[in-house]
Length: 148
Image 1 (tube, one colour):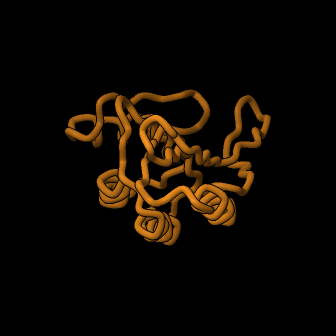
Image 2 (cartoon, one colour; image 1 turned 45 degrees about the vertical axis):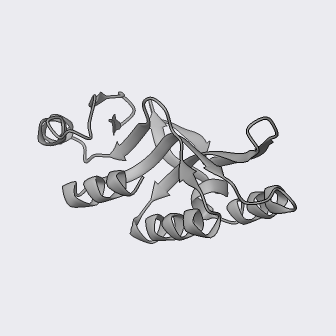
């Protein structure tokens, strides 16, 4: 996740949505699941509905989310999340929260990132970022944002 934050910040991109991230924690499950759920749900980038997405003049309500589950077979806690409106302060808070909860990235496969792009600059931004090794695919999503 830190590499995504660094890449976006260096490219001057505003992260609207960071999706499909999965983590594990080997902390004891005693009260950890409820504690971490409560902590995560206080985060505005997880628990606040945003209205940044407009399609055909209609605003869409979108919210971040987090799921915390105990995997008894693997004896680990699994945390999955989507983070919204990740400005620099939210990025720093998420990095701190990950450390506080002892989370290790276990994401397999692609992650999806939506960034806010000024109208008329979409192709310029795609051309600027698509050759970076961290970007597997960059395209317009036709909802005034860009996906990579």
